[in-house]
Image (tube, rainbow, N blue to C red; front, side, top):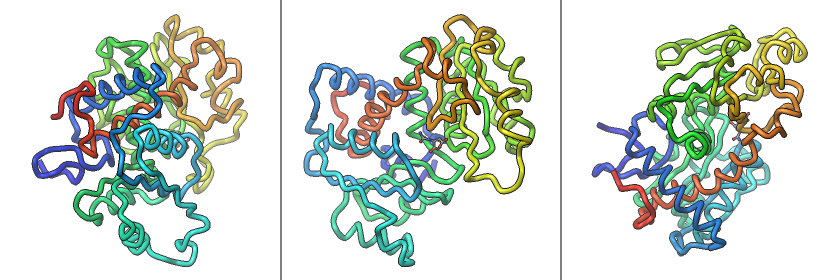
Length: 324
Ligand code: NCD
């Protein structure tokens, strides 16, 4: 199988999307993150796994959690980290993505983390970097956000290890959500019992039914009996044209309220990748409530990103999970 993410001998070199990775490799990432999370909890703040390596964070789109979490992850593995301030870089002077890449590569970076508005940007980087350099996708357009999908899956597995018997509902702006796309593939690959997608008809992408998910436009029906509900932000910055009547109407039909949550399974986990629009897709009392694991998702993001960085750099020996 030819996948740009893998080396010819089948090692994970880049992390660009979840498709094609298979359950064994995803489980290896989750298990590695589990041991790194434990190490972090035992207050071993820095592990020497990426000592001598340089990580470059290249964020062409706004980010709070993802960028900080990649930065902390790299630092906790003892790498040198550079955060390029894109708005103050030569890209605003018209430098091409390829020229930016070659310029940065000339300074000997080992690992690029890229977020870009263009679907395919991370892959483009991966196809052009020199030998030994890895690329991680921090979100490309509406295409993929694989590290977010892995940290969400990790959070679910920590609370509900029996994935085969879970009913998970992803709700909201699926059309523009790279998070949803990657989550669907990750959760399906790991055999989640039932995966429902719930969105207004205008925000359901074409060909979604081919991904083995159930589609429902009625949130009251979709949430019934759910073990996990993942809310998505309305990504207005990616919408061209009127997709929705109004935010009030959207909240009335698709907002996660305490009343709606009461119809899910008792103890149903409430998740959101952030940033949240309180009062639009989620009621504040639910976002901050006892069933919410939203801040835990953020915390788990560091362990997942440490795991992925260690794996692509071949520095994960002895950390749990087997190479495969
Ligand atoms: C998501 C993203 O950027 O795709 N956020 C994140 O990385 N935590 C989701 C979003 O922006 O709504």
